[in-house]
Length: 395
Image (cartoon, rainbow, N blue to C red; front, side):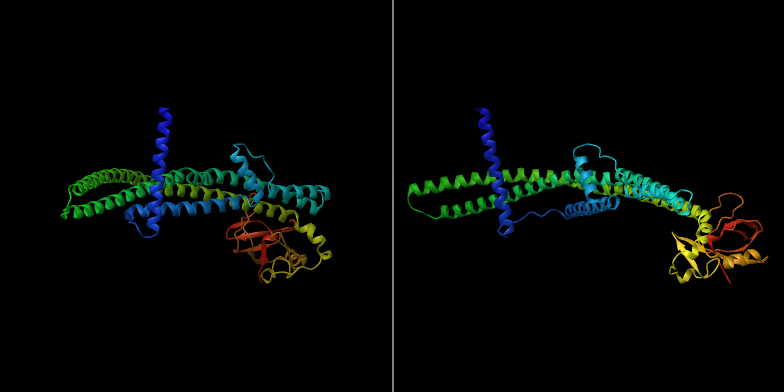
């Protein structure tokens, strides 16, 4: 019974406090009550925390879209995460494309030019898919997880303490309002008591009312001191939490650097994979392409590539410049040399080859017995074989 009485009293007290806060909040909105303003420093900290929360959510959500464009896949991952279960591994788009290319190349025949090229492209796409998977895993661990921990952990604590501070502020202002009303009532009673009213009963009643209002005033003053103390303590707790936002920014900066490094590694891997693929196609593709070049339909050629090695007629496939044999044969049959501009960077595969940098100009000439896809390049004291698909002859 005592426990029930205690619960009922607590429930009644909580209801009274809630009602008092609601009345105070409504009167503030109507301009009928004064509001205690927070100090400028605390207001700035609150604004900074709110701004951090908003932009962190936006960055986190857009990063998730960047790493996983498929909304259904994101929903599935979210559900598995909430169920604390590991999401099933699925093949990504580059891996799927790579598998299709490999299957098609196998069907067409690895011995054919097209089939061989498809298989090589498919293998490269699967490597890119693996790099993409590593990027998602690294970014989720080093970037998305810290951002999510802030939103679901630190900021929730800040929001909870901020709400508590708001309640303490309403309690303080409600106490100030009650004290103000008690003072006004006591002043009015004193004025009435000071009037020389006749009758002992009337004087006794006014004296009793005055004493009652005085006690109520003292009680309101005590309540104000308590609410002021609780408000100041809560303001200090909230301030200490909010000052941690600067540390959060520093931590997120480190996470951002990790994300940039993960992206840099991913794009560097993709670039290297495609460069290697370009070299492979450049070594095996031109000769077989040239044998069927007259059977293909004409393709518009950019004017910037009109003077590529061989002749003004140039075909461009997957970034590889293919030349017809007219001027190439002239160069091979002559004993002279020509200047050529390098179209793409090229890393020498062995000591017999010459590494190239895009846009540099080198001297090229033919050597008897050399493969038709290569020329001898010379840059200063350096000499070596260079692939013709990387060059543009100059007049």
